[in-house]
Length: 83
Image (cartoon, rainbow, N blue to C red):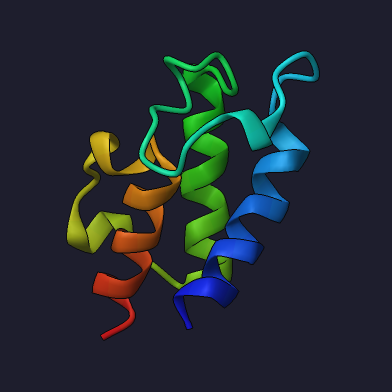
Protein backbone atom coordinates (compact mmCIF):
# COMPACT_ATOMS: atom_id res chain seq x y z
CA UNK A 1 0.00 0.00 0.00
CA UNK A 2 2.81 2.42 0.90
CA UNK A 3 4.41 1.84 -2.50
CA UNK A 4 1.15 2.74 -4.27
CA UNK A 5 0.87 5.91 -2.18
CA UNK A 6 4.53 6.70 -2.89
CA UNK A 7 3.99 6.45 -6.65
CA UNK A 8 0.93 8.68 -6.45
CA UNK A 9 2.73 11.29 -4.31
CA UNK A 10 5.80 11.29 -6.57
CA UNK A 11 3.59 11.68 -9.64
CA UNK A 12 1.97 14.72 -8.03
CA UNK A 13 5.29 16.20 -6.90
CA UNK A 14 6.56 16.04 -10.47
CA UNK A 15 3.74 18.41 -11.44
CA UNK A 16 4.79 21.07 -8.90
CA UNK A 17 8.56 20.66 -8.69
CA UNK A 18 10.93 23.30 -9.92
CA UNK A 19 12.02 22.29 -13.44
CA UNK A 20 15.75 22.55 -12.77
CA UNK A 21 15.66 20.15 -9.78
CA UNK A 22 15.24 16.43 -10.53
CA UNK A 23 13.02 14.56 -8.09
CA UNK A 24 15.15 11.44 -8.49
CA UNK A 25 18.11 13.25 -6.93
CA UNK A 26 16.26 13.76 -3.64
CA UNK A 27 16.18 11.00 -1.01
CA UNK A 28 12.80 10.09 0.47
CA UNK A 29 13.78 11.62 3.82
CA UNK A 30 15.32 14.82 2.41
CA UNK A 31 13.52 18.11 2.85
CA UNK A 32 11.93 18.97 -0.48
CA UNK A 33 12.18 22.68 0.31
CA UNK A 34 15.83 22.55 1.41
CA UNK A 35 16.69 20.48 -1.66
CA UNK A 36 15.19 23.26 -3.79
CA UNK A 37 12.63 20.93 -5.33
CA UNK A 38 9.63 22.94 -4.13
CA UNK A 39 9.06 26.31 -2.52
CA UNK A 40 6.95 27.15 0.51
CA UNK A 41 3.92 27.93 -1.66
CA UNK A 42 4.04 24.40 -3.04
CA UNK A 43 3.33 23.17 0.49
CA UNK A 44 -0.17 24.61 0.08
CA UNK A 45 -0.55 22.60 -3.11
CA UNK A 46 0.54 19.48 -1.23
CA UNK A 47 -2.11 20.17 1.44
CA UNK A 48 -4.78 20.56 -1.26
CA UNK A 49 -3.62 17.33 -2.94
CA UNK A 50 -3.79 15.38 0.32
CA UNK A 51 -7.21 16.77 1.17
CA UNK A 52 -8.57 15.89 -2.25
CA UNK A 53 -6.88 12.55 -2.90
CA UNK A 54 -6.76 11.12 0.61
CA UNK A 55 -9.60 13.02 2.31
CA UNK A 56 -7.29 14.29 5.03
CA UNK A 57 -9.12 16.98 6.97
CA UNK A 58 -6.40 19.36 8.15
CA UNK A 59 -9.00 21.60 9.77
CA UNK A 60 -9.86 18.72 12.10
CA UNK A 61 -6.42 17.13 12.53
CA UNK A 62 -4.28 20.25 12.48
CA UNK A 63 -1.47 21.00 10.09
CA UNK A 64 2.05 19.89 10.89
CA UNK A 65 4.12 21.53 8.13
CA UNK A 66 7.26 19.55 9.02
CA UNK A 67 5.45 16.35 7.95
CA UNK A 68 4.91 17.78 4.51
CA UNK A 69 8.51 18.61 3.71
CA UNK A 70 9.68 15.13 2.74
CA UNK A 71 8.24 12.25 0.76
CA UNK A 72 8.65 10.04 3.81
CA UNK A 73 6.78 12.50 6.04
CA UNK A 74 3.93 12.77 3.53
CA UNK A 75 3.65 8.99 3.31
CA UNK A 76 3.68 8.66 7.11
CA UNK A 77 0.88 11.22 7.32
CA UNK A 78 -1.19 9.39 4.69
CA UNK A 79 -0.77 6.10 6.57
CA UNK A 80 -1.62 7.68 9.92
CA UNK A 81 -4.74 9.42 8.61
CA UNK A 82 -5.93 6.42 6.60
CA UNK A 83 -6.39 4.26 9.69
